[in-house]
Length: 198
Image 1 (cartoon, rainbow, N blue to C red):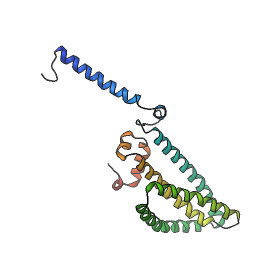
Image 2: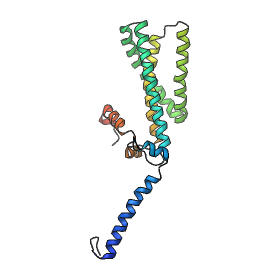
Image 3: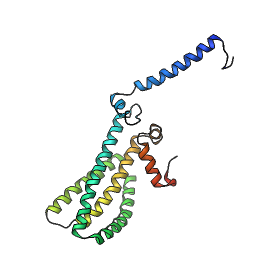
Image 4: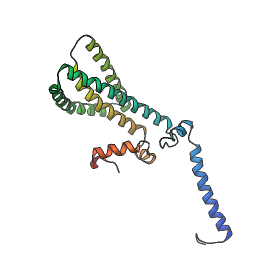
């Protein structure tokens, strides 16, 4: 008896198998909670990932919103205090500082718990905003330091966002669910073929 036998009992068995497969698909849809069903309208969220996806989305929105506000202030401060030439030199200084800071951060990351490191690094950058505010109120010229700091803030917070994503969601599962597939593909293309994980 092969798969293509036309006896009535075999046909009924094949039909019931297809019906069961369809019901399995609806069972998977039923396992999504209300938040996951709402998020499924705009992106593909797998069951059990609604809260994590929402937190990651809020984190991304907050991070990018903060960066664009800080970047606007950075440009105004550096140009008003020092001029365009110092802005170019500050970019070079930022690149040189990042060489040492990223190496130090990498070493610290191997010594500490990742979640603790992410939390305290974010708090460190947030506290620096208060320092810049009070220094600016005191009349200090903070344009160059603030310019370099915002560049370093941008590199670290974006790296931390993707580290959080990596620890929150398995890479293979995230690729399957394609939660941020458009953004991921753009980032992978910008990183070059050597860094892609296919």
